[in-house]
Length: 322
Image (cartoon, rainbow, N blue to C red; front, side, top):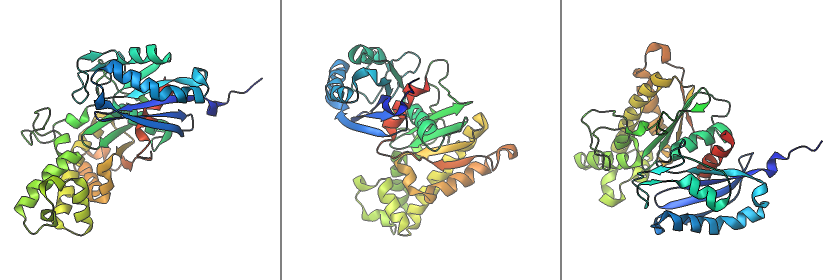
């Protein structure tokens, strides 16, 4: 009897962002065999975008054995609905309204296509290929330009009744607090713990302390990277920016822990490059705000997926989650 060679089975992983789209061919071991990218925002019509995507990917499909070796296509996309295969009212994409994206991809590529939002895809990627291997209960928090999240309970991603569960970044951590630049909500986690939120905090704090190293930079250069550069040089205001950010993150994480009692919380994204500057206060304030039955049980873990390939791996994991 012939044995199935799983390493010959591959999936297409596609990560769609507001500016760029990344794609790759991934095998069962989580190896990205080929990858490429194109500009999302150059295509005003979704049909033109899918045509361009097909034009770039079809040589890879041929190279890896046409569709006989492909188990399908997984797509991580903002406002992607796992249940319906639609992209719905995505504010940062050029295409508005409700788009039957999975169906359009299937028609074009002649392969099954599954979609979800980018943070859920990241959670699946960690469960299949990364730090959450073997875990059935964890929360993935992506700390980048915004704050995304994916919740896994009993081995399954929580999608909710309509496919949009898990928007923890928009939960309120400071009622009546900082106004979000896009949603208009006041005091959301994203307004404080994202790279955008860190820049806002840094600009406010440096204005109060003229001696801070942060004042050496022009306004447009203040971001999480420059704050980190000042923090590692010992600037107390830069360190305080991360401490405050970590506090807000930790307070939110305590609520999330008491909601789903995860084994671990996985942190991913550019913000975590700050390391202990943000991790230590986050852990301190998480534990401080937990009921005793939850304390000292939940690990804060950094992602193990390579940053350059994480989005592609997460999207491809959708194919094998079925």
